[in-house]
Amino acid sequence: MFTQRQNLDNGTTFSLQGFLDLSKSIQIILCIFFLVAYILSLMGNGLIILAYTLDSHLHTPMYFFLRGLSMLEVCSINVTVPKALGIFLSMDRSITFFGCATQMYIFSAVSVSECLLLAVMAFDRFMAICHPLRYTSVMNSKMCYQLATGPWIVGFLMSLIHTSSIFRFPFCGSHHIAHFFCDIPPLLHLACVDTFKIELYVFIVCVCGATIPFFLILCSYIKILYSVFLLSSKEARQKAMSTCSAHLVSVIIFYGTAMYVHLRLGTPFSSYQDRMTALFYCIIIPTINPLIYSLKNKDMKAALVKINSIIHYPLYIVYPGTKLY
Image (tube, rainbow, N blue to C red):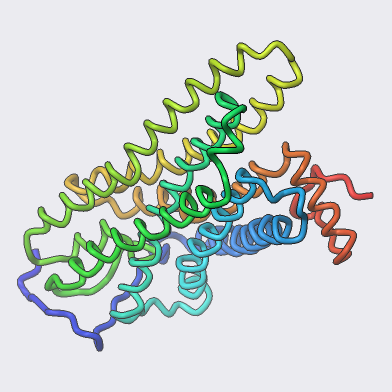
């Protein structure tokens, strides 16, 4: 146990361990994985944002929220991956006090916002399938903008509280962070003081920002599935299931990994385990979401084909199932 206590100031730097404790061959594989995932995520989410912007046929609540999700994914991967790649390529593990605080603040805010936005998207599908006659009146433009901006506001306010609290703590001895970005568990592991209050707050945030929305999503999908099975048309059932299954897969992966890390703050910190788990919600989710939401979506695929005809870019590299005409 460290005996030295240091109060951090703006001139203090941390050192991110990244994956440098693993073998060189594994580091090379992870570096390639990070780089490819980063490029695909930016391209995939960027194309969804561009498709919504250029194609008026996509100007519906579902695609409006999907664009918002893609914007959150772009923010999320940009705040974590570039620094992780820098550790792999230049071996520069240092990150300033301000840089670490900013990284934690933005990533936490985006994560909470994404949890809430996924719940909003489930509510949108619930209204569209279970209450189609009321859908247009309820999901009007004003309501959509409120539901889209609400998660951002709540996420950034919640993140401000715990980030400012954590970076007031005195930290012990070495400032080596056993992670590839400034996440909450490894920072609390370095604190010299009792962190029970902030851990309790983070737990409450996880319950309010993740667990409760997750169960609301599950309840929505139970009702959606019941309504889908009551549809007389087989084609209508398949269309509804195709739209909702993509959202449900994304929800299970994102919520499952995020809650696993942040609802167990009171347990002993495991560097390797938490880093591997973080790969899912930091890297894999932003990369596969564009594929999940577009490969089985005829409207999105048609919009991507139109974009390809305008910019003459080979979309099939990112979306191998898309036919180009």
